[in-house]
Length: 589
Picture (cartoon, rainbow, N blue to C red):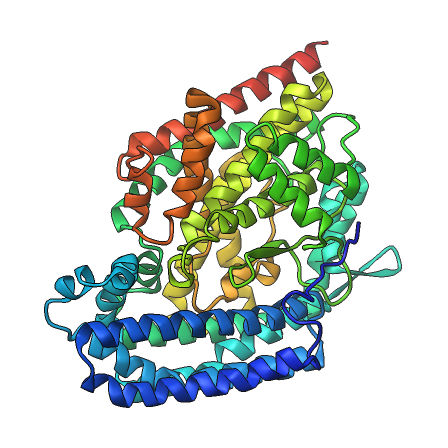
């Protein structure tokens, strides 16, 4: 099987006639919208709304195809000159539609008796949530001229800063034992069996950031400054409020979830101290040991073994999920290994316009890499369940995006523990708890960091030292005495891409939301058995057409009830207690 992804179903190349024709088609569609804006006032409300929905659906599919191709090429080669050129070209073209689109949306917001219009048309009824959300968001819109200015300035502002950050990180080399290695390769050494390798790679990584810290800090300051300015102009109380509205999530839901997380932190700290003691540390766990293996189990999974494992375990939940994963693996939808010029981390890009997905990994042969593969394939399966929805009804908010991925992780880990021997089961259980610690504790630290970053950026730009201090303070607040305060990570803001999404701020709490909702869904699966798989797919298919609270209620979950979050967290705490008992047994033997 190929370990480089195949993008030819989107476009074979930038020189391909289909790509070049679609660039020209995009120009035509933009001009068509400009003409449509001048004529829409002469149309009846239903006729105008229907025409808008059809035009926007086609336009969204086209821009998705072009934009996805360019961004996927750049994700594996951030210096690709053609991709960078077309990224700028497309961004520039899209700014010209902002002004007419703003005027069209204002026309829609002014329609009298909107409910009657929607009820009179099957097409509008299908898109009722989309239309009403558009009208609700109108209060945060500026004038057409102002929207156009912001869109144009963004191209030389946050978009440019984000591209610079990607280039700095993807081309960043770390000196380790007289070798120059890509950052992504060094990050994978956190999972190495050898303690000295883990420590040396951490120290080399930390030391290496001196070369790029000023540039990355400038990117961070530039992007966050722009976000604050735009939020103030639009009338949002804060970037967090804007994120919650875009997430279709209430402040009340966030607050009860964070309260439950705060109450659970002592249990996670107990886990970290138990792991530290097992590895021979007395002052909490050093940061570089967060992913350290705790038993000498054969947990190496090359890509072939790992992908086979994922498909087999997915089949324990549903044939549909297993078949989807197999298709992704064998049809070269996945770019597997680290390489120079490739961005760090992992992601899934759902390509609704061809009813497929593409997945980026930085696979390093550990069980954690298998879990990451399952996580990203879970995102893809979410897209699979939405493939029969319309283009406009397939767009779901950030928090629910992390639910299907985490549910897929849980399937892998739970099934793997059942099949494993004692040492392997302990290793998998620890991997599960370690992953949950990242998603609950580390994500909480990232939420605190971003909250304080925004507060201080509202006053002035932050120095590198101040940004590092905020990161350390956030880690101490979240991890407490679970980590050795002499070995924290002051540079976690550099390579994590989430801080650099100007349109998606606070991309941290959605991971905790996704994990805990997935835990609740998994509990329902264990209670209901195989019949739950169909309900789960229906739940995922609904995620683009309702608020998070209503989506959850469709499957019997009340997100505003703190007891739900506490129950989900309790399943992790029970795993921690089991882990501590197994560790104690290992020492007593």
